[in-house]
Image (tube, rainbow, N blue to C red; front, side, top):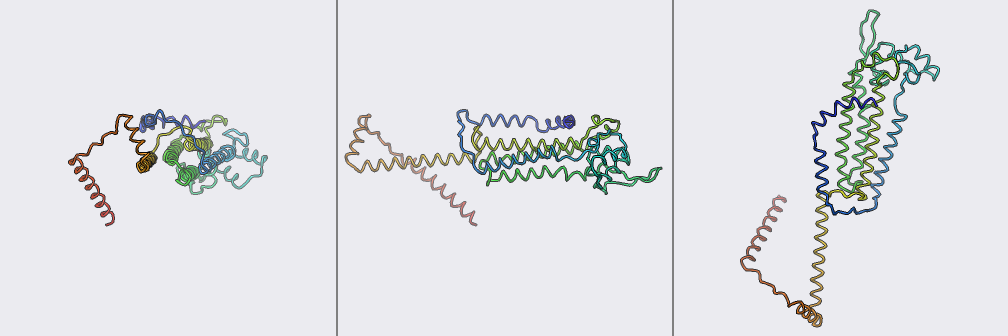
Length: 347
């Protein structure tokens, strides 16, 4: 893929900007995960099945775009060289299929000058055919000719480039809502996927804006030409396909507990609350059993004998009066502060 060498200049500034932050995050995540934590397997919820199904469907759609959704390349279709004249292209194309109005417009644009062919390799056929305000009149000795502007072609191509990323971001936002994503780790995936989509979109726009199309000016054969428009199309939908599959795999891992992940603060508080409720219920049950036992003489005598066999009933020391009064004062001050906060909230 010819896009990968163009991405290398972005790696160094991106590495300086981000630095080792991702490595530190992974290290802290690994350190915060208890070593003795065993993965608790649970069935996949129906909402997670729906999310995984939609992501797999999106990946299939992206695969179809990669295989069949690209713009038609008239040079590959007619098996012509890059320097082939428009009349030859027209004759070869007419033998393959009937010519359309778009074909006629495109051939006219390609016959104008070499710059139009270079723009064709960079932006594809759609801006050259449809963008009428991208062309300006130039007075030449042979007569006025209409030439396209690369910046205007770039502006016209922006909606075609941004739309797939925005559509995928909408799908991700829908699938990470609390109605579908049950765990916080799955809901937080929207943050990281949004970062990835923003970086990919920025990289694609940077490549398109800084690409020097004159490298194709001396090309003759098709293999010598850098077909940037078609390369970026494959790059765009391939990355979206990989993001969809990775997102689906992460949902399956996190929702089924296949790999133990560090708990969020809300989940930790919820588990602590459940543990406190269980302990409180056990204490209340022990008190009730003790009360029932002490009501019957036979059971009470059995308990007393048991304590004597263990060395006697433990003595219960009285709490000192000073400590008791201190606790009462702290409890009274705490209650007063709570009441004051509630009154301020009501106001």
